Image (cartoon, rainbow, N blue to C red; front, top):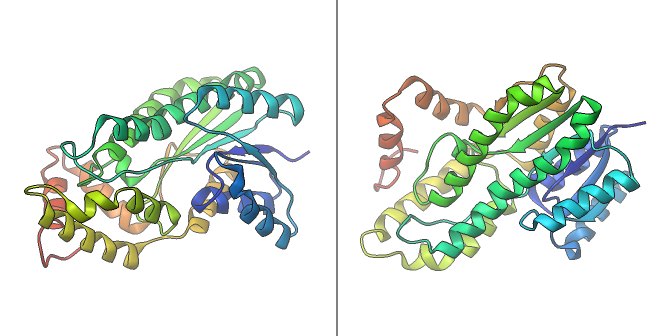
Length: 285
């Protein structure tokens, strides 16, 4: 029997591509999504490749939805051998610009969703003495970035959670891995900009020029260095195939170069200066 993987946030982007890549590699895929009205694209893509996968409803921001989905999958289909925490949402803005509701929404999806999904699958994995939990974090989980205050806060929290859990999980036979992409050209980026469009257009006193400069600089970064959702999906497949997987996987040379700056500079000054330059006109990315 093939091993079973449950993937969150499979309606588009990295989750969509990961569902197809893993199904093609022989995994029994349970692709979940908050809005089942969006299932047709994934069904069509799978059918065109001759692949079979299970699509189920799951809203990671709702604890009851998580518990119900995991329980039903385990009772109807069998054990969950791997979990890929992929579902996420973004909201651009600084601490002063974002209201509490927006911040809580980002935290509910990106942090508490991961926390509750992980907690839901752990009992089964612990009982069997094996399993693998992979979480899509971001270079933003290692390095704070302008106007990504809430998103980076959530990803930093996920990184701390998984790093703390990893040694305990390994003693139970369960592997923990974190994928940390840099820029990835998927619907996630356009969706984030769409929900943040009013802020990006109007800004606030003292922020307008910085927002414009930073948006331009990051647009160049995505165009030059951006990976695809399939790139990340194939990295996830490679991690699942490893006998001794690492805790962290930075997915590109570009992201690795930035991460190294933080690891070698304990003061943090270099990272601050790097991103300050992106708030100014006419600077290199």
